[in-house]
Length: 115
Length: 109
Image 1 (cartoon, rainbow over the protein chains, first blue to last red):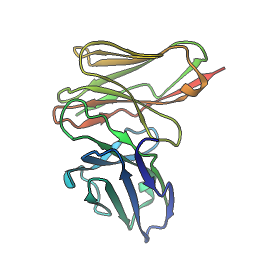
Image 2 (cartoon, rainbow over the protein chains, first blue to last red):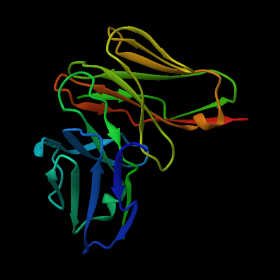
Image 3 (spheres, one colour):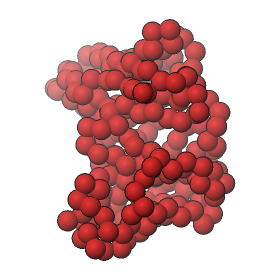
Image 4 (cartoon, helix red, strand yellow):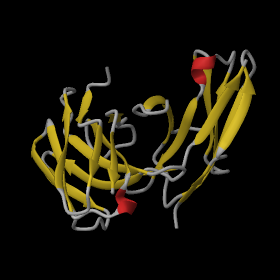
């Protein structure tokens, strides 16, 4: 039990669909992250929220839209995706975003397939 | 640019020792992390190094040399359950984690 949960675990969607990924952390952390993990590639940081405010947006296409209603919940809204967006989407949380340590705790991920 | 290099895949025998290397070139350094990720599961934290030297934690040890931009993860007394991907990540001057692509470790009986 990592303390970070993600739903759904698997998602198949067409390019014209709209769907949302959900992440919840039960660790009392103040920072949450969305990562994209593609096969044999480094983890790509997509978005960072600290105390519910977005602090990082690494040039992610607008078809990905994050939402952080409170420090325990994070959403990733998806619309008009492309097949190259198929990947494992990981959510993570940590105590904060600055400082040397700040270990990140990961959820199990959502395996997304775009047809 | 910032870069983390680690081997794509390694194979080792159950009961043996394996060393997974990681070299990095980043704008600043604020610590190096190793994570383990089993197929289809979340990455889990293994170790953190911010000072030069060896950190030992049971069967796993992690070494850091900041002057060489180099780290390794040493796994002893390998077990079949150690088959996983091992991810190296460095915190840069902005405290952002820069990730390697991971090393897939295959353990054979």
